[in-house]
Image 1 (cartoon, helix red, strand yellow):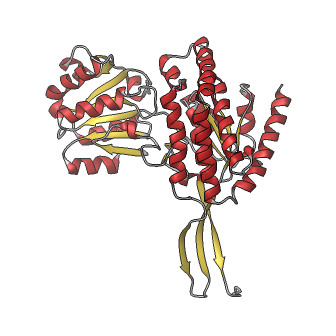
Image 2 (cartoon, one colour):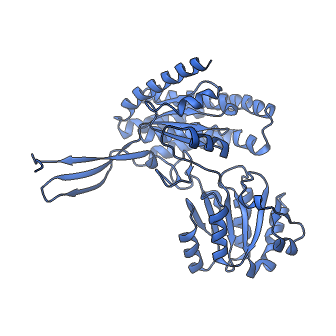
Length: 420
């Protein structure tokens, strides 16, 4: 079976490289036609996508997936419509390819330009969220990249159904269907093959849990754009309005607990803890959220369970939140930089000077002031969609949209100059 997987993946790589050669030369109008046509196909095949998703949910329940993972996997008409709308939004964005990013002239008359180009062939390895199939494909098409997508075994049928719609869109625009390929096996050996396909794949993007991301980081021979876990914080500063803090906190934690932008830790300033913590704790506990806190927070609210050292660094992806009382801004920032995952962190305050310090000193890809951490999303940033949230520093950081899936080359214009 291993040899069969190797042969299959080599064929996928060859076809992706050939398709990239066509897509990289396509104009913006043709790429946008593919995206809009794909959106139309998704809307026309809602019933088929839902039927495929039902098979995946049944499979996931048989495997014992928890409620948060089932929520990530599940599609309904509203979520399917968001897939189509996301593709259409990507189509409205400026073409990120072929842009002159900078131009200058040298004393010898040479004119130099830095021009944006696609990355090439992108390999995306993800777990149970079938929406990644549409998001990753749409962004890849817009940025002129071919995509090899390997979704999780739980989302196998959903991803194949969505890919069929994308192929219809590509065909309608006169582009090769191989611009987007979904690996057609659940065998995990396909992941290992992708991580070694240096002759075909230019960058790997993992999107999933810590174990997947760590495996890619450890085993990939191909450059990666890493998305680590989302241990996100809400810090309620002494200058916070309690009503705003409550609303932002509840949304950040409970809007959807199973996404990477969900807040996992509440930090509250000691100066206002006696007044604010009971209000904030009630807002969370009344909605079914378990709180695990330090001794100081437990003294204020007896419903808070004792936290362990492990809790400060845990991404729960569930209705559980750690709580810690901190002595001011410096301690809050130090805690976040020590225990956070450099994903998304929030300060709630009306003190603009404190907010500036927090936004400057917290070492995370996204920092927010008086806004929920669940805005950590490419769609909310105006990118149409995202291929992931990069928590590293190279090649991109934060939501990875079409623009982040480009690199550049230098174009030099001369009039016959030679170098002495």
